[in-house]
Length: 266
Image (cartoon, rainbow, N blue to C red; front, side, top):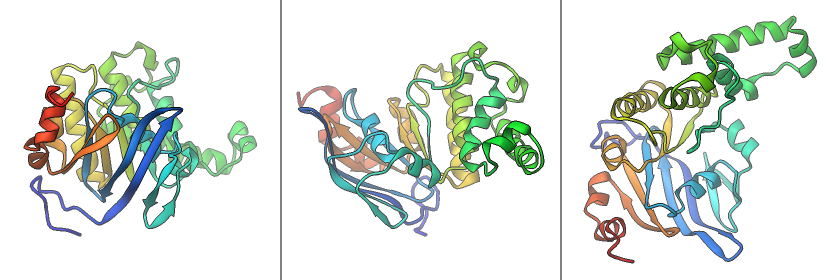
């Protein structure tokens, strides 16, 4: 465990190490020779202009995309790439830039889907809802209720998600990811489209997830105020290349980063 950083959090050893990651779609290079690591218990931000490759990097981490070059080291295991099942099973959960919920299902049932990989009973026992399957589902529902209480959404637990305002839908999506009890939580623009009050609530929940559960968080966010306030370290991408990496203050004063955001370099 390393000493507390400027945010006051105690940061652990490297849990995820991405080395020389390159990803292309045909002749279009999405990521070029990118390396950075993520330490246990930290909030690690990925920032950059639109089209910089931020979401592509998250997709590499959780197995949606397979890089043509590079290596992923997760908890000491060397892998050329992840697949989505391995990533989820090994403790990596994800929210999406565009909300991906089951709009006709209730909040409770949506969050319950985050427990699927932890269910041991076979399909027949689950369908019959008898014996071990019943006891297991009761235990999983208890965990889901804890997540609902944590996110302060008890009053909408039986409401179909499609009837909820955007900010609450984003909170439900966070709840589904938390139901999986992740070791690493990937958040793809969790505050996009939110008003000021909704952003403040989401910031509070992200900090509480990190501090109370000890969850490592990798965050993509365009609101620089949020990034600088929440993050322990920031990696900056521009046109698929890494142009900065360090503490918020180091990144804020990096001239190449300033140029990229101001459009001076292009």
